[in-house]
Length: 119
View (spheres, rainbow, N blue to C red):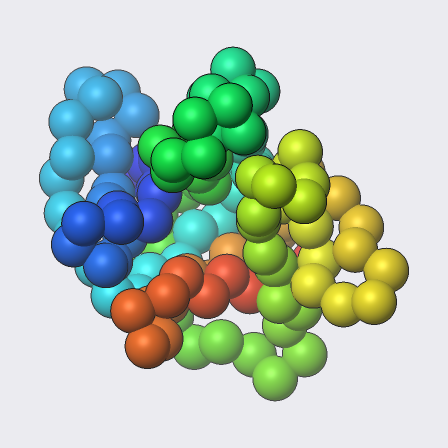
């Protein structure tokens, strides 16, 4: 099933939206996606920058997967609308991330954690 996932700031977990119907079908503290694409809606990002208030404008789209074991070689991904215009690999030299073979999303200390696996 193809879904769109974003971090819900009020519930402090991920909202899972069925791409076909556009409806929220689940809320989760952890899930994984296959063949994922990272999306940032620039108009929403600009509104965040202008209003200094968060809104839903960044999400991950992919095929929902039931296998949730995060591999030890997975890379961490982050997104901050004040610093970047896309999702980036976390580290000293942040590189933009547009797609990933496998994405793992989890909530830790009420904050979203995103990991990717390229192969």
